Length: 104
Image (cartoon, rainbow, N blue to C red):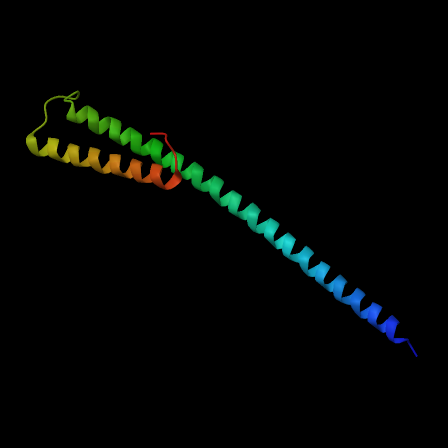
């Protein structure tokens, strides 16, 4: 029959082993979650950069329209070009504010 000290030590060893296994499993999960988060952030940064690039092209062209570089515009056409320019500027600002990016 095992002695009480042997039972106490065996139980303590089992408890410590179980806790260590649980900690290791949680560390693996945390590591995977961190890698997933970094991957998502990298994809979002790439997408937001591409969006800013496209919006900048639209804005550049709308500024050229407003500046009559393609010829004289009617008043209604000029108003639409100004609305486009304002909307694109706001969208770029929103992206910059959300991503913390200073690029335009």
